[in-house]
Structures are given as C-alpha cells and as structure tokens.
Length: 90
Length: 442
Image (cartoon, rainbow over all chains, first blue to last red; front, side):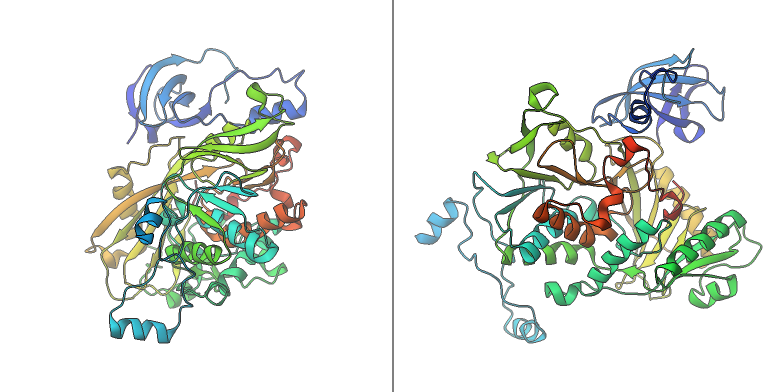
C-alpha cells in the first residue's frame, strides 16, 4: 500500500487518490503545434528515481497537489504542494 | 588441461550443439540416469557484432532466432543484465490469445498464435501449449457491448470468437457462480476457443537453444551501461539524427551498427541512453499462485470488472493475475492489499475454492503506453530499434514481434504487420486504441 501525503487530509491510501501523472510545464494550447501538444500529452520521462508527479485527492478534499517521489522505493521526498493554477499535466 | 584453459577463458568445454530432443532420448536418459547437456554455449564477449539485442527475454531471443533462421544474420549478441527469461518472460501468467479489439491488433496477435501453434515442431521442444479456450466474463451491459464489438472484429478476420450467455459459461466452467445473486452477476462472456496457456520458460529456453544452434551468442549478467550514438542533435551526440555505433556494457565495450531495445520495465532507461524519449510509464503487475489441486477449471477465465484472470496449470495450481498498479514505479514489492482484493474477487467468481491457500505472489514490470499498443520498429536514431511498450500483452506477442523485428532489420523496411505500432504514431496522433481488449480494467 502506498500512503500518499495529501496537504489537507494527511497520508491517505493511494486507492483514495487518482494518480494524475508526471508534472511538468504545459505548452500554450494557442501557440503549440499539434506535434508539440502530442509530445506533451504522450511522452513520459518515466525516471527510475525522483519523479515530480500530480495526485488528485478523489475521495477526500478534492485537491490537486504535487509531490516528489522516488520511484525505486516509493518514498515521498518533497511536498505536497497544492496546485494553484493550470499548467501541470491534468 | 585443455579443459582448464577453456574454463579460464570462459568457454564451456562441452560446448557443442546439443542433440535433438526426442522420446527415445528422454527414455534412454531416464534409464541410464545421465544428465542433460547445456543447451546454449557460454562464449567470451566479442568486440564487434552485426546486431546487439538488449534484453534476453522472449522478445529478444525470438528476434535473435528469426534473424539467424529466417535471414542468415548470425553475428548477433543477446545481452541481459540478469539471466535469460528472468524478467517479464518468467513473471507473466502464460496466457495466449488473439481476440483483440483493433484489426491491427487482431492480425498481429493471431500471427503470434500461429507461431506458438507450430513452435514445438519448429524449435524441437515441448512448450506444453494447451488450447483450452479463453473466456472473458462480462458483468455489465457496457462490458457486454465491448465484447460484441470485439467478437465482430474478430470474426471479420476469421478468428474463432463469440459472445456466449451465462448458461454456456456454466457449461464451460462449472465452478463459476453464474447466479444473479452475485454482487457482480455474470451476464455473458466473450469465448475464444483458440486461446490458452503455454509454458513460458520452455518458450524462452526453446528460442535460446535454437538461436544458439544457429550461432547466436547469449551473454547473461552483462548489463548495458550506455549506448554510443554519434551525430545526433542532443547532448553527447545522441538523439534524433544520430547513428548508433555500439554499446558500453559491464563487461566491456562492443561496437555494433544495430542495437535493439527488447526490454520490459527498463525500456525507458535503455532508450534514454540513445537519446530517444518514449510514451511509456512503468507500472508493476502482481500475480499469485495457489497450492495444487485436482483439475477443475478447464478454460482460462478473465473478469475485467473484478480485475482478475485465472487459469489452472497442468500441475493443478491456480494462477491469478491482477491489474497494474495505478501509479508509476519501478518497485516490484508485493502488497497485502493486492492479496486481499484478489481473494475477495476470486471468491466472488468461484465461492467453492474458499479453503484453498495461496502459495506465493510476485510482480513484474509492465511498460504501459497511452493506447495499450506496443512501440515497435525504427526510432529517430539510425540503427537503434525498439520492441517495447508491451504493457500486459508482451508474452503473447513474443514470437511474432521477434519475427517481424528480424524482418525489419534484415530488409531495412518496416513490415506491414508492425507498421501501425511505430513510435511516430504518437506525434501524428495515429493511435491504435487497444485498451478495450485489456484482460482486466486498468
């Protein structure tokens, strides 16, 4: 079981959350080419190590937040930080 | 003395092509109690190969075998950081089928089933292929709708696949609870008689042995540390427009004009070495096996809504697989949560087995792509090819992907069968949506 640190609800089971995916800058939809947009949609860094990712507290406070997790041992290293504006992968 | 010298040089002194397997050989070995010879050689790593295959699982070994057998390219090295078949090839639930959702997927996986069907003769090894039928249960109307869709797509391509009602389900697998009192009542199923199970280790050994006969070299415990690329636009000359010149391994450098990434779980890390980004997220899938009992489950049973698939091995154990974990990780530790959920779901389907005990659980890494179809063929780096992103379909596709990748390398052209699965489809937005054919909802 993975306990995900929600900024409001504290550590909660990952089953209560929705994994949104890797966090990163979103290209401007008005100026991005289709290829750039698809690259943003589909290409993953998928690192074996530190990953900055977005979670959604689905069954709790419904907050989107960003954490940093080591994907080799599932330890949360940084965060959580609330997502305040669009820009992360959602 | 010669033997000691050979051993010091890392050469197996008994290295010679092992004899053909036969019933007579089996009996005479049993009668005389002689041990079996090694089936592949242990040779020193050379400095140069025509083709280097990263990953010694079903995909890598099949590719090596077909390169040698179909195209005469034998100066090939298969490198694996652990042992042959120790990754996904040894961790899957050994189910094969071709009842997919897209015409591209159906054609591709059906070719794989054909190759599996003749494999025992082609590779002269008993792969214990059992075409026991494959049944995907529907618990809701919407699931039944997708199954009708799949059945129609399948029938158009001459695949034996049809939707059956609960009474027929009961006839095929009497242990299933088809009553309407269940929390998730069975409302129908997609039945695919040609599907079944196969001994996955035998497939690995069969390809390794056959490839060895053709002169292909397999190097275990040889980890690829870097891929050397020249002339690319990225850092260190890697990335788009570059050309592969070789690999750096834990046992020394190798130069090779063609490097193929046949890994699962580490596909992204290997591709990163060449400067190629992939649309892959790595997630673990957990599986478990029970103690052996008498045979009572004649078909493979899959339930998408209950996230479980079950088959009974020839030894009598029930093998369970589940859905992939819902977040990216390279950690394959099992969880109690999985076991509890699995047990609950299996008992929902088969209440009669509540006294059975689990023997062990394990997990393997799945490389999930956005459309649940693989990434095959050429990449922006010249000479670097991919056969990755298999998600939960990798084992079924082993033979055909090996055959087609070998053809792609030998001819320099992408075969029609794998054209839809190119890496460039993501930039073009030309996805091959196969999620509806996933064994369980992910």
